[in-house]
Length: 236
Image (cartoon, rainbow, N blue to C red; front, side, top):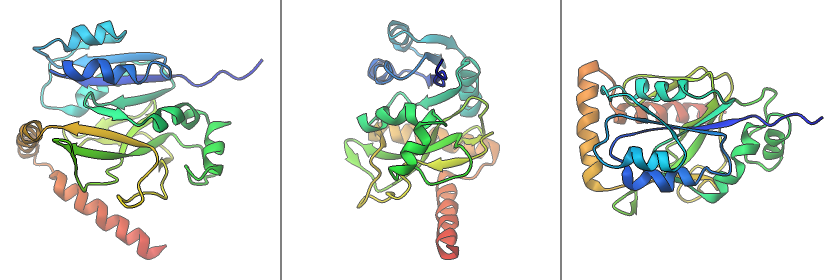
């Protein structure tokens, strides 16, 4: 009897995302075993659409702590792996196609390593960073690869109320790691679409949370990450 494939669950948090819920969830129909949406207090039809699309919907009033909201969603899933998805994102079809191989330690990961999509490793991977293209009012920004660690084993959790940090993984890597510039982009991307108005509103909310908890700003976090990456290149 063959070995059973690992299971994959989709986790989403949302608030007033009715326009995005249906197209977001529909991308995952062929690759996930369970879908959980945690609603933070929507005043639109987000909940209705999530339920129509087959999601198990949970309600948790948003308290300005994104990690707490996400961790609540993760806790509702009992799958081997979890993909955490933002409603205003879409996945390129190529990325959808490799989600199952990415979580299969015996066959999928070695196959993707041979194809140059994953680096060689003596340990199996349990967390993946995926490049994200960011669009504001339809125009792509120069922030890239902007890795998002969205695919991980179920034991992982988030820290920090904003600019969340994923913890609990043992062996993390980036998908299509050799392609990480706008001139030579990854072949498997998250596409993030947002209006300028929504971005401004988000920036204000994030700044308020940063101030409340005395956190590093996203600019500081990205600056530090670039410095660390440059240090790695010099020591390579």
